[in-house]
Length: 308
Ligand SMILES: [Zn+2]
Image 1 (cartoon, rainbow, N blue to C red):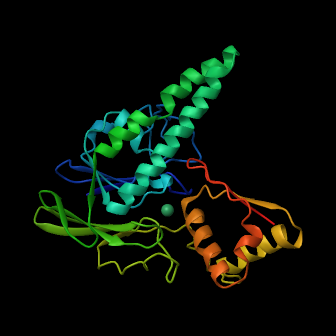
Image 2 (image 1 turned 120 degrees about the vertical axis):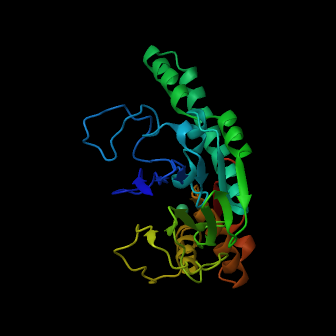
Image 3 (image 1 turned 135 degrees about the horizontal axis):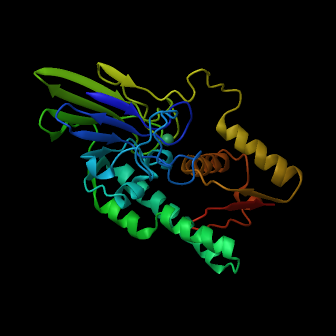
C-alpha cells in the first residue's frame, strides 16, 4: 500500500489522504476545505510543492480515479471539498457514520448558500473587474446542486462494525469523541497474503466532554495517522467553559448593562454555547429573564444576542 498526505500536513485544515493499494484500488480519506487556499491549484511540474501537482483543479489527482471516500467527521476542514470532488468527476460512494451524514448535509448546504450569496453580490456589481471575478468564482465555488449530488452518494454505516468495501479490504469506524458522529477509521488490507492495518484518527476528542462520548481505544494497528494539532501542548483547565461563558456574560451584559453578540459559526461552539448557557441558568448563575430579553436565531448564520 502507498499513502500520500494531500492536506493538513505542516498546516491545519484541508485534511485529505490517499491510500493506494497494490491492485490499484484507491481510497481517499477525508476531503476537507483548505482554509489557506481559496481556489483550484495550478498545474505545475517543478516539484517544489509537496505533493507534486500534476492536475489543474482542486485535487492533485484525477477525481474519477478514486474508488471510495471515507469520511472521519463532518467539520468542513474534513468534508468541505466533497462537492468539488464530484464536480471534478468522482462517481463513487462516501462512507461515514449516520450522525456525520446528517451534520455534513447541514454544513455543506450552508457553505453552498454562502457561496451563492458571494456570487449574487458580485453579480450585482456594475464593475467589469468584479464581473470577471464572478465568472471565475462560479467555476470555483460549489452550489446546492453539487451538495445534493454529494449527499446522494453517502452511505451511513454504524460504529464498531467491520464493513467490507472490496476484496481483502474492510473498514471500521471507532468513536473518536470530538463531534457527534466523529470516528477513527481503521482499515484492514490483505495484499499478497499479508494482512496490514492502518488507522486514521481524524480529530480526536477529549475525555469527559459535555454531550460527547469519550474517544474509544483504537485496536492495535501497523500504522497510525494521527491528528497532532495540539500535539505539543497540554490542555490547561484554568477556567471551565461554563465559568468562561459566565464571565463574559457577567462583564458584558450585567456589570455594564448592554448587548452581547455571540457568533457561534463553528458547530462545536454552538453546541457548547447552549450546553453551558442552560447549565448556568439551572445553577442560578443567571436569572433566565434577566438577560434573555433578546435572542435572535437565523438558521444559516446563527447569531445570539443577550441583553439586560
Ligand atoms: Zn473536527
